[in-house]
Length: 377
Image 1 (cartoon, rainbow, N blue to C red):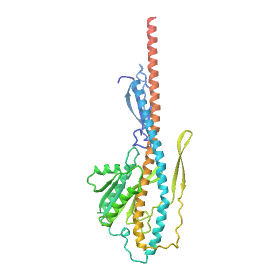
Image 2: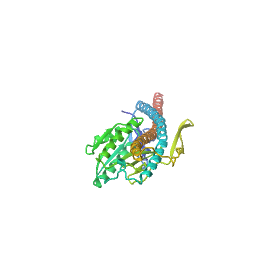
Image 3: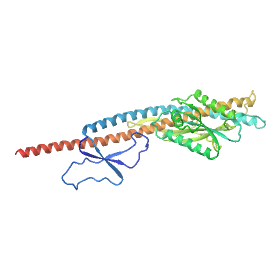
Image 4: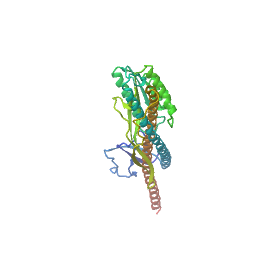
């Protein structure tokens, strides 16, 4: 392409999300019109790196139209993710009363079993020789570093187990995790499970049955769940929770045995302010009915516990799938928001360069006409 030379300065400061396809910020200096004085030139500052871009007005118009189309796509993906994350967090919050009430029931039954010598398979703690890792990832990309963070967490945990001399096996949940482990045949994988846009109890039960059979048959001595815990729209934490053996109280514990049950949730409401999408948040606590201390069980407590522990195992996995989905949608909403902002800024800078180059071309043509008219006089 033959045209006047442009100088594109790319800021050295990274954007909020470097994984976005538009995660860069461009600042363009005025177009340099060729002059006879060689000493007049532009020198970029030391904080920016410059590269010469040669393009015509038609190419600039094409690129501006391309950036506009990309901005429309990222804006639409941001709004879709914002609508879905609302439903995802509602599912997490609505499941909280059931989990808390189930904890109270398990705790009450466990108190009655303290004086009896009973054997509950899911609560048996035995020397650990092999660990099963249930890794929950997303099914799609364009969500920042969401999938990368949880996979790095899994790799770090695998290195720790190798250092301790323990065997391990992976149960992968989600298409991104499946493709990641398929490319690494040296990591033993027991099962690949595809995720869905809306986690259901049926999907959680399929995973629970698999880990239940592995633990009860003593193929593994411990099951750990790796997923992304939803904290807020701009924050999510990859965590590791001990899934089996279950705590007699039915609590969710980390690998050190510390209870990590959430006491309250942050609820987010999407609104518009001055024509732009905004988020309002509030901290809420789920209301649960107090468990009666005088309630008596007609059946044997061991039978009830054998029925409730698998149920709570299913609820833990379902809750992890729901929080992972909410974290993925929040990460995609943030990434697409950053991409939209960067596209808007890039479009503005390209339009400025286009206008300056077009004005320089018009000025040059006027100078040629004036010079030709003077030569005829």
